[in-house]
Amino acid sequence: MLDKVAIGPVSARIYQGADYGKGPPIVLYLHGGAFLDSDSHVDRPVAMSLAKAGAIVVAADYSSLSGNLFPKALEVSFSVFAYLANKRAGLGDRKSLLFVAGEEAGGNVAAGVALKARDQMPDALDGQVLISPLLDPFMGTSSIRKAEAIGMRQRWTEGWSHYLSGGGCHPYAAPCLCSRISGVAPALIFTAEDDPLHDETIGYGVRLKQAGVGVRQHVLPAGTGWPSIYGGKSDGAPDWQENVSRHFGSFLREVSVQPQLH
Image 1 (tube, rainbow, N blue to C red):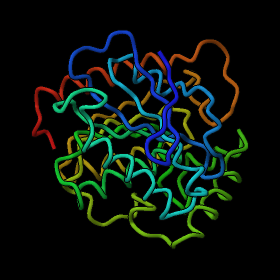
Image 2 (image 1 turned 120 degrees about the vertical axis):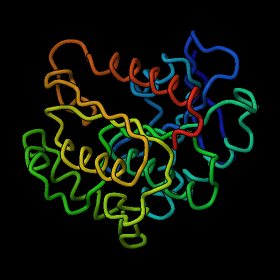
Image 3 (image 1 turned 90 degrees about the vertical axis):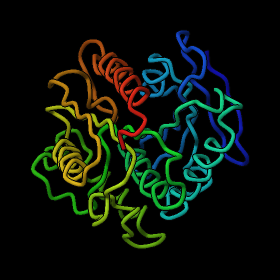
C-alpha cells in the first residue's frame, strides 16, 4: 500500500508492505540522485524492498526544501528523523524500532543522520542501512574510476561540488572523512562487485567495524542490476531488490533480539 503524506513542511511517501505486524519497524528512507535531483515522487524500488521485509518506510523529500545543499539537506533529514523518533507511535507504536536508510547521495545523508543522532539523540536510532553510499568527495578509488563507463563520474563530480558549496566539508557531509565514528547505530551496508562505489562503501564498513560498530556488509554479485540505481541499463530482473529485502529482514531480527548491538 502506498500513500502520500506530509510531515511538517517535508513531503513524504509511506511504503507499507503486506506482512508488517504489531509494532513494525519504521525506516526513514532518503533517495539518491547525486545531490542534483529532487524527489519527483517516482516509485522508489529500495523503499519498496525495505517495506517488503515488514517495515513502514517513510520516503522523505529532503532535497526540495534544502536545494541539495549541505548542511540544509542534513538538517531537513534530521528534523524528519527527530519527528519520527518522538512520534513513532503514530506510525507503528512507541516500541517500534527506528532506522535510517539511503542509497547513493541519500546514503551519504543517512550516514550523516546516524552521526548526528549519536551526538544529539543518543539511543534514538536503532540502525542505519547504507545502500551504495556516496561518501568520498575526492573520488579517488579504483572502483569509482569505472563510473565513467556509465556516465556517472562527471555527474558525481558536479553533485559533490553543488552539495558542498553550501557549507564546506564538515565530517557530517563526508562521513568517510569523519575521524570519530564510534558509537553510531549498527549498520547494514550493501554494494556489488560491479558497483562504482564499491571501494568507498567497503572502506566505510571496515572503519565502522574497527570503531566497534556492529556491521553487516553484503557484496552482491556482478550483474544483479545494481547500476540501474544510477540510471544505467540492466538486462533481466533487478535481482538486488530481493537481496536487499531478505538481508534487511535478517538485520531487523538481529537488532530486535540484540537491542544493545550498538
